[in-house]
Image 1: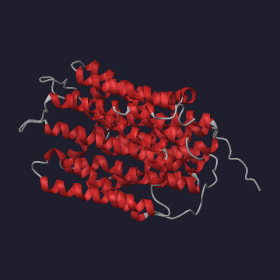
Image 2: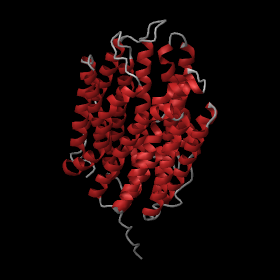
Image 3: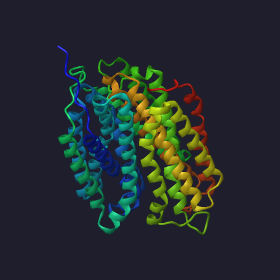
Image 4: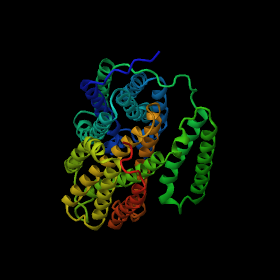
Length: 463
């Protein structure tokens, strides 16, 4: 007997997913702009502050493939509601945290939010035709980016005028409300492949070790002269974790990350491009505010937190619009054309910042262009991957791309920080201007090197 087709996703349900994307994006982004404030209030060392800034990314990278896989097997709505309950608990723990260990625990729970995106794509693919699904995925992705930028802008004023507790509490309340709407408005989706296997615990542990070790290697890299042996030991450990994880995943009956999916050209190329694009973007996201904050007595502009938020506002708007624009453009022109245009724009913006950054408007315009290009590229890559595989593999495919996105952002930010640390003279807190030039040049060159990969994509990839 043929099963009934899934119920069509209404506009109100898509809006509920969009609202959830805004709320989770805002909650994800509140730590970065307020890290100095948190370090002062919780008496954190720089090393502890660095750990706090990346723990959500690491746990998100671990949760994302699991969430997507479970969504494919047991139904996206069912898994999403349970996942957002964990995220809400984490947000409340972070809001009430009296100390760093408790705040770290809250951030670990909040990291589950990164898995919400592939689950949204599972739901959209299950309930909408392919063409409309592209637009809906673009809208949800763009709103997640917009929510992140809104959280970045609002976190500082909320923490300063209310308290650090409210900067976690307000977006958490929004997450809870949006989750209730999703539960009420989204139709139930049937399980895809129930009972296909259990949790890949060895793969999860090995991937955890790989990600943590990678972050430690990048953190110690600027001080290689002072700590050569620990760094060398970490590099060896990283290689061992990576090799072991690949071996386990290739042999596992139900792997955490199905590496066989990477054998498909559209998937591995999407992952490579996403990593490169997000690495370049995150270096700009890190370097531009730092450059704005450098004292005006040197080569900077001496901007405070409020002024920096204002200068980043055009980038917020561009990032928010890029998602739906990318979805519609991919539907009309194909994903390859959108990705090609986005990478060209990003490389041009990064190289322009390396050459010219003597006026505030140079940084504002460059950052906005990079934000637009990133939104265009990542959304097109995710939609291309999501619509290039069977419906039952949507969560697995998009999870691979989104894990790569998280890694790209984490590695890019660490490289940017390492460049500034290495270029800061002893006894000074102002790095040499050449460090910014080098960072923008590296990011622009790496991004430009992705253009040949884009040209190998099938024209209209993901249609």
